[in-house]
Length: 307
Ligand SMILES: *Cc1c(COP(=O)(O)O)cnc(C)c1O
Image 1 (cartoon, rainbow, N blue to C red):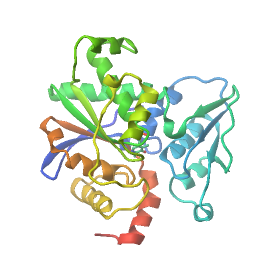
Image 2: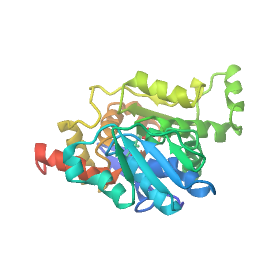
Image 3: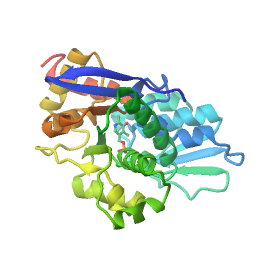
Image 4: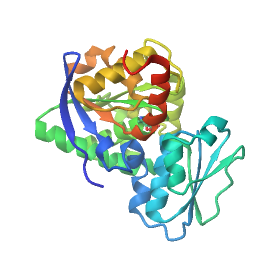
């Protein structure tokens, strides 16, 4: 995987650096490309099929279809439910995943995988994601050196929290020069704060839910990112005027298209916390633009082209 660029932008009088993981490649991009990097680079001689489950419009669902195509694997995806509208009018992630050969199963739970099948948790929340997120951390640290920054704040919105967690953990590991479990014992003697602080905001559940997600992947809370609480409760996948407004502004002022599910909540919350900008601040663009097709159509139906 090639490196993604980092751009300098201004937004609401703040200077902000943007890590353009949306540009990693045309099809396989964003944080799903990072999370599935491990499965792209390693050999799996016995694997013939990948199995996963989740919602019928998820970015992970689509990215797995790309992975399966690249690796020549069959791909079976399990959803609890699919709207008859989507079934009759495939669009967005669903449409493109089907085009890549995904086989969809509705109303059945995913089977236990055989030795020839690779099972991927919903949203790619699993240990192997750590591999690609270490690569991302390394790219960011190299850039930080080049810029001559001593400290850096990194911001990204969370779903399962896998990306934010493994990124913060990798920063600690590179900083302390240790790997795995050895890191945690270092906190017993002295409290520390990392040179690269990861801040995130929950988009799917609340802060408690996100904390639980972190704990499933890493028991040592010293290694967890910092969770910011949005000033307003927004439900995942619902439409909000302020979300649409900031998304249009981001496009207008930066010339960058962000994702419509996570990034509006991300940017609104980041701007609500100006103390973060006291240090150089890097926002991670986590891709997801394929999903915008269906979200944008819904927004335009509700609020029009402009606002
Ligand atoms: C999947 C996704 C997220 C959430 O990532 P997690 O690792 O589950 O927290 C955020 N933004 C975009 C664009 C995504 O596709």
